[in-house]
Length: 356
Image (tube, rainbow, N blue to C red):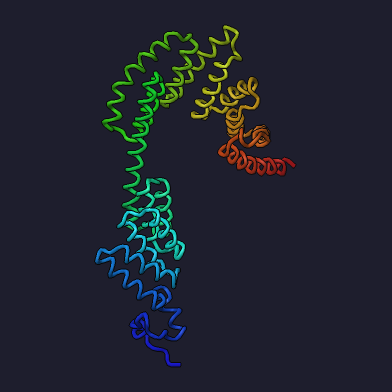
């Protein structure tokens, strides 16, 4: 066989006789022309598209896909026509067929995201864009659309928060309305709608809070001040308030009350932040005396035992958590305890070997 030169090969038209298979594989596979009749239908479809006759174009692209459904461009062009006639359900179907024909054809994801966005399925559109960016992370169209979509979703979320806040205010749930506005302002700080609502809700909320706090016992006041300090990362200050709360409860013989358990639990969280492991162990133990299946206390105590190299005690707490129902423990704690168990088992074995 005489092999043609590569330059000659590249000039084959779609309806030319195929060159030798060797060249076919090496040079033309990625741009392999479709079936000649299908390509002819595509060309006719393109003419109709340019002339603005989208329905006729759709018919031609359909004929092309009937001959060869594995060429993504036919489906992509069809989807573009459906977009022009605002038929987003069929656009959605055509885009999915495009992706099915070639999952690396990025425009398919763009078409799908466009259809889903038009159908107000913003979550689905976001997933389609993510899938496209997984194929080509630098694609400008996908990146731009993702940015627009993020803005749109944020706007929709803020609008739904404001609606919820208006309902809560109408129903007299001022504390709930205030929390909703706090969440909304985290999403879109400085939004004038949020600020306008906040100006209405915040004074009412502060008056209610003042009233509520004036009815609290001194122990409850210390617990709340501890919570505020903890939120502001003032851990030493928080520990001081929780300690005063616990001392007051101890005096009144309420050392095992619900309030005491919460104060021990929160003080343990503060001790953890400043790496006072002995403090964590002591407070978690106090919580576990009242509530032996408190997952948070068991996990925190296990981590603290690990911190002071009391590995067997840590392992015991971890095993207690892993023996509890999965739904009660939760995925995050379960996965963390599983990892800790492997690590601790290894450490305990090494210590045994070292002690022999």
